Image 1: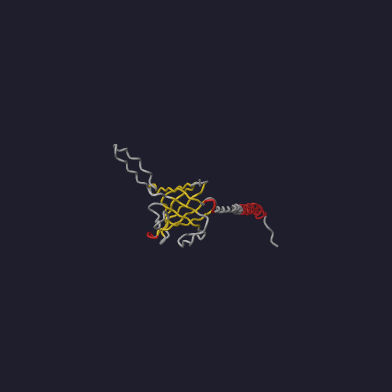
Image 2: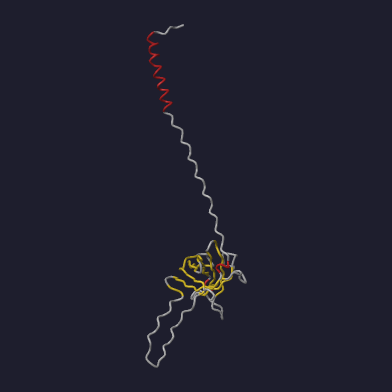
Length: 204
């Protein structure tokens, strides 16, 4: 058995702390574990869609006015002409064609296949420059349907232009107001034409 010299024993005693410190340094150099992921926020409860209004609530005859591309339809009544000299009768000013809207609570005689809803109700609309009334009538056939809450859509086609016009509005009391939209029935493209207001006539 070989004996360890006093010099080697002293060297080993000095090396032991160095090894311990190196091991401790290696242990401290290890990366910290990643933090736990934050809990995901709870999903918001879905908002229930508002039920559509009863058709009878919107039924009635309305006086319609629209503003399309900066033009008011029907045009405002012209100012009265200045009185003429004695002996001549003043000509009555020309009256602009009336614009009107009638909504009923009954289904139409036939569904409009171009309309984007099968829950159609019968309506008529007169909007000079945009509707085409049959001979002997003052308004064009249209359809309408409630879409939820106080909102509704009035829809009528323009066969000669392969287009459709829709009035998309909100009913508040006897007043209906919203936007006028143009839809191409061939391509489906659509854009807003203007705005409209309609006031329901009360039976006397």
